[in-house]
Each structure stands twice: as structure tokens, then as C-alpha cells.
Image 1 (cartoon, rainbow, N blue to C red):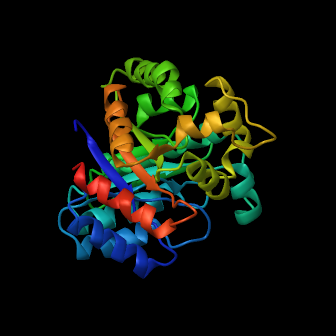
Image 2: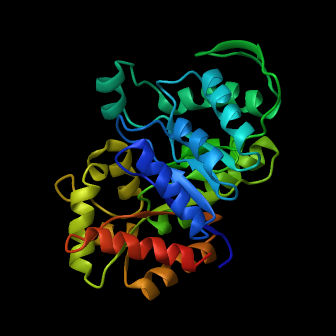
Image 3: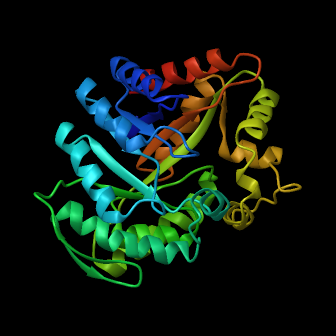
Length: 311
């Protein structure tokens, strides 16, 4: 295996998430990731606890939502975690989606890409240099932190413009429910274009993939429709799928979309598809296990064990 394969370690509550991270390290898994969806335990705070209970595993957010949190505060929180886990924390940030942000936080969701660009203009220098002197459309920040934390900043990316932004500003781009063909045909070129325009090395694309270990394709498709029903209904995701050559069916998943996005099958089949991602130009993979309906816990455990075996 040529690149790192990490694992999302989500659970219903903070103590259970922490236990998952500890288990992942004990199994030899190299990277633990926490997603942001909903009003669940705060990922950055949980990682501060995990930093004290682990010693090797890399910790990363995929993603921490930007709208509810000022970029300077985000930098301070990331610096705090990094102090407990030197060289092991990576901060993935992103604007999420209007249907999630506006009703929950009461914050107008406008021009998310411009918002993210202005956000990075504060966050990146705060973490890289410990010094911020920025005045842009959304932020006026003049501050000096005690030290530069050196935390890598990754951003969520879905369409070409966000991959270009990652190339210009970020240390990596994180995908989600994206066909690898879209990454090959559009995203890799876009992130390279952004990096070239900014005169910097091209950062990696981190491929965040749902994985369902099952011998029955119909179960994987059923699990996807149950657990990931939201995404084809979101306008940005629907547009991405159309750009990749897929048409959502009644605002939902088609079998072809599921087979393009979800790595499903037995262990050998999924391992082969994971290896193919690196051959396609992916820098790193995040495995997001989803449970097959007939045995949710068992299929998720099989995914964990596969990731551990591929380290």
C-alpha cells in the first residue's frame, strides 16, 4: 500500500468516540478522523482528550465547520490540541451546507467559497506564523499567538473551484461521496492549477470513502440509501454527480451512483478498490464504515479489521 489509510471513529457520545480512537491506535491504524455532522460531540475538543490518551495515531477533523466558529478561535483550539499531540493533529475545515447551517445556527449561508477563502486568510497565517494581520470582506483580525503551531490545514472540496482553492491555500483537499472518476477527470487538474497559480507545491487529495463490507451488493445499496440519503438531495452534491455523469433519481441514489461511490464487497474486493485509489492519484484515504443491514456491527468490525490489515 503506497499511502495512509485512516478511519473515521465516530460514535454517539464523546467517551465512546475516545474509546474508538484508542482502539484504532491499538490496532495499528495510522490515522483517526472525526466528522462534523449534526450537534454531536465537538471533534476538536474530543481530539484534545485523545491526544492525552494516545501516542502515535494521527488525529484529523473531516471537517470542522467554519460558519459557527471564528477562524482565530479555530486556530487557538487547533494550537491547543497540537500542544498535546505534537505533529499528530491535522485540521480539516469547511463551510458545510446551507440546509444544515441556516436553520441550526441562524447564520446566512452566502457565497460559501468566498467565505472559505476569507476564513483561510486568517486561519493559515495564525497556525503557520502565529501572526495575523488581515482585513478582508468578512474578517478584520490583528493578533499574535504565543507560537506558531504548524498545524496542517485541509479543506473540504466538492467542485472544481473548491479544489482550486485547496491548491492555492490549503495543505490538502478532503472529498466525500465523490466518484473517483470525477477526481481523476476534474479534481486533480483543478488542485494542480490552483497550486501553480499560487506558486506552491500541489497538495494531496484525501479521498473520504464510505465502505461497506458485505457479500451482498443489495445490502450495500440499501445501507447507502438509509444512512447517506441526504447527499444526492443537496444541490452542490447533485451538481457534482451530474458533472461526473450520474443523474440522481428522484433526488436519491441510483445503483450506479452507489457503486461508483461506496467501496463494497468482501475484504479482498474492497482492498483492491482501495489500492486502485492510490494508483489513480489519491494521496491518502479515509475509510468511513457503514453497516450492512443484516449485521451492522459485524460489517463495521470487518471494515476496521481490513483497515488495520492494510497498514
